[in-house]
Length: 495
Image 1 (cartoon, rainbow, N blue to C red):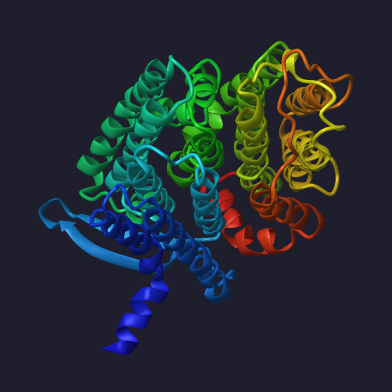
Image 2 (cartoon, rainbow, N blue to C red):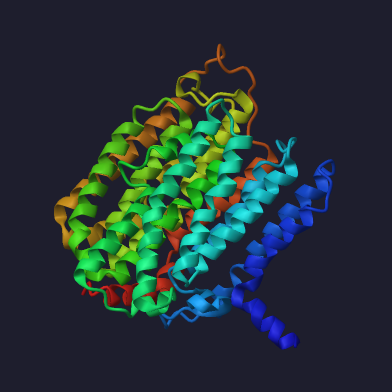
């Protein structure tokens, strides 16, 4: 019996159960006891994070099949099961999810004066849902869980947001993602009627007619494009970031944006290969326009959070160029850049949060000369600025380089435009750093000067370690995902 329990736990059951158990435990603690609430939430998230690398130790990188598979009969009459597994593509996204949640809880540690229990519960429930998204092997639940993630985020923005327009931003975020996904639900129902099941593994082996592939691909694209987000359905993201609390921006930049790109890799590309090849010029055009447009838009923003948000859109559209390049370099580079994107913008939002906590403003024109009053934060901010402009030795460089290599093999013009976007990214990153850190102090606007404290520095250190680790020695990531990516290329008939 003990052996069976250990086997179930080794199959990642604990990763999903731990945040759920933490949330249930918090229900029995009074709101007035904020210290135990904080400790239980932090411990539940830390236990989940510490266990998340264990599957990497037991992971067999020589096979593209899903591993640690678990199945639970959910709707047996409709042949719909709670079917979970993990492969080389989704492995590191689970680890990234469990890494960011303790950070988010720690960020709100001192500011959790109202509704502290609800705040932590929202993040733990969100962690459970996000882990399930990357492990889900059933199409219907692959729709249900990503559409459940915006619910706690809606509450986080609406309750703990920072400005008067937070309710509008929360509704905009929720409605954009919900309406786009209704087409995805129609596609899943059509697949169910043809195959008789929502098992993703069976659907991947099913041959769809070219006409049906195009319809299903368009339906899935409408859902995933909003989540990436791609231009012109990106408006919700800057507004959500501006109104969200710091921890909300960290988790929003780190994980949910990957649902769209992960959906392309898990669903659209392997299941509808002919439609994918037909739509590649459309994706290239849309992504190239988005990279140039959002990069230019970034340089005209006056809010620190909006600058990072638009920069995030540009990087995610570079990811879509890599995903639709029919080679291992493009797809592998897009996955690496997604992982890096989970670290860099999240860390930049933390830097902005530190500034906002002290000065209560995010407007660029009020800042300047912080290197003389906040040297520690200025150094940390500079490190993440280098990563945001994809400097060699940082986490973003390898991913963007491989994307350019893969895109150039398919379309040199698109690769050139993507490279131009990288140049613009370096320009606005250096402009932002220069405006905030260099120059003269502005004591007429900023009155309280204090550098990052020990708690804040300790939060930044894991990001710095991950940034350098991925940039200097990235070999562990391609080693784990190479077989899965190769299988995706071959299954999609991209060779």
